[in-house]
Image (cartoon, rainbow, N blue to C red):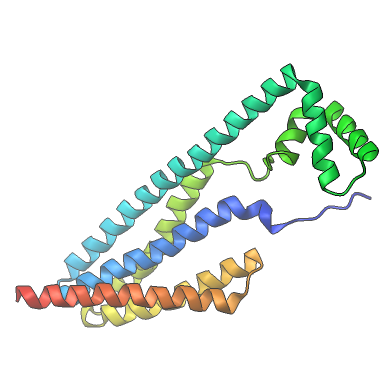
Amino acid sequence: MRHEEKHRSEHIGWLRASVLGANDGILSTSSIVVGVASASSDYQQVMLAGVAGLTAGAMSMAAGEYVSVSSQADTEAADRRREEEELRTTPEKELDELTDIYMRRGLDRPLARQVAEQLTAKDALTTHLRDELGITEELAARPLQAAWASAASFAVGAALPLLVALSTPTEWTTIAVAATTLVGLAALGGLSASVGGAPVVKAAVRVVFWGAVAMAVTSLIGWLFGVSIE
């Protein structure tokens, strides 16, 4: 029987982008809504600012993530081409390099040499990318996947405060959005920690604290701005 194991690191690419996007979507849009609501009681202004924040934020997250992960993908591609060239021109040196790697991991020289020769015979390039550079197919950079995950998760997260603002009276918008956002941030922080194997409570408290700080600052700015123009 073949023993198969699933590790959390297999999901780190899309998980990172999705969690970052959703967190930013909830927090940034809530901060916008709270700030504008503190400055103005005009319902249309509050909703317009929230929708604009959702749209701009989702596009910004997608573009930023695509550029960032594309840079990583370009670096991986350059490393791949370099390894291909070295394997073509100096195969014996590359074999010695693999042997040294396995010796540093605990194998004696004869066994390390044997392992290096067998893995090189099977797939030299994949072996060097994995054992020398740490590049694997599971963890390879995927710019489009990261961009879509960031944009979609941002939009989903940003929809939460907008729906709350849409369904509550204007005078309660600030309190309702802030409360819902903190609950959402706690749930998101706990979920991401659980999936990643980190302490759930610590992650939830951390994200709630900074979320509360962000909304308090924007609310204060909005209130001061509203007072100054009255």
